[in-house]
Length: 278
Image (cartoon, rainbow, N blue to C red; front, side):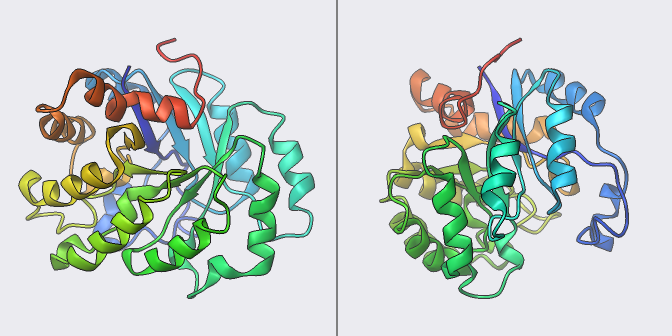
């Protein structure tokens, strides 16, 4: 089975999606399930995981509503993890089995956000729920991520976009060292996603991106890697199907079981997806 472990949906609003800059103007429109289904069908993808794009409970509940129909098999939503009433909010959200995890846009937060007592208190409340916490950070935040993950050795974490290496600046050494260190934690998986927009959107090549892919393949192993497209953000630099073709090329020399893990099995296991292929 082929699973897209990371994509978005939205009804575009300039105020709510102010992070969409002029150089991403093609994203300033609606991206909804009908278009998603067309993309998945073209790339022969069996199911997907929708991920929050703005930090609101309204969006989380909307995504869960959208996921009532195939091919969306799960949702990584947002909730106010640091809030005092988070446990009650979490209990309410968990009534919907399509909620598979939560994410906060830590890349936009100040240094040491992950060390805050109120945020860590919220992560403690996730313990035992089976919900994954998705880590959205820049490469320079990886040391903070390592210290954070060490506080929760039994909880499941997924590193979004391979920790956002600064590919456009051809920086790899420091990112590589930190990613390899993070990969020593067996409770962390890694998404092969978001690379085309961390590179120069015009001049990137599959060969350049493969240098970074090879690092996470060696560090995490196929059983802890999953592919995500980051659609529609990826369309700034790549089509939906093109990203799948690139990953297929990278994995072509791997065994069948290793390919199966990266292309869908890891995501299905980590996010506890059901209804695959429905």
